[in-house]
Length: 460
Image (cartoon, rainbow, N blue to C red; front, side, top):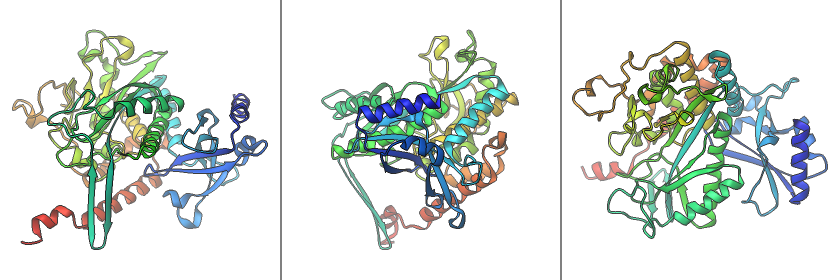
């Protein structure tokens, strides 16, 4: 297989007159980094055998005194980068240690994703997990923000301003339908197939692009690719995109809803005709695991302080640890419009795109696996199914809710993380590093005066 990939990539280099090789990977918090190398004879063979050294401490992975690490390209991710003026062949890279065995780095998200799929097969007998993301984002034509010792502000300007809910708004009022068309074509060049796109609920330029189902590793790669594509394409058009969960006051927030199902022997492993939502016992156990561990999962699915400005009642926000058919206030929604075996699935609605997608999806899978292994029944645990509004008097006193802020999510993770240790995926080092980073973010936000506080208290 490796020889075939090398030949394929060398053919790309020759046919497209590639001059640069680009290696991409994200740091622990999800920011994308890259390094570029001019092409020379046998460059791919050299990269596969030796890799490229880099400073892991600058990625938030290692301490300064022990920070040398290695990037090795995954040749199966080869793509010609349309945003580089010099012909460039881009790869996602795996991260290795510098020991004699070139051991995979335990905090490398791509490594964790591959191990999680292996654990799924070993513990449940399932073949694979399949994920379908919904990308919500805002487009602005002017953005200004800054934070200094004596000033803090943000300002976003939008070309659209609807009087009410803008869901599926049509042109000419949907200003960015051509943008989404062109972005979908670009994503196809990257190997990401768009299912559909449309204007979202937000009245000030909110968009959505949904992509087709792929396996865990490919989906996580695709999350990075979609963000990279949209950020670059927007800048080419003098526009600005944000996936921030709540970029504007009293406007709909941006989620990264994730549709999910498993397969066994190539067939949907969740389906059973006649059951609630056509979800069988295994599927219910998987749901039970995700809902039981939902508060701890939030530390990875919603890992920013801004995440919890979205996760509030109203705005169709999924704040309740419940499941139901078509219920958008529930953390898990079983789509009512799905009526065939191959597409039977559920949607986990809390996540947003501030997440590291590899950690987010891997943590979700481990929670579901724990549910299957330990037969966590969501009905017996009181998670539903509920098809009523969560404010209904008959159920509101019996509902569990997601954390209200990032600090609560980290507290939940502190008392509920054994499910993440299955197969030694989330090591103590990884969990400690993650919590330290997030606690620093909480401290920074908590000690910074907010502009609204001046409005409330400056003249008090």
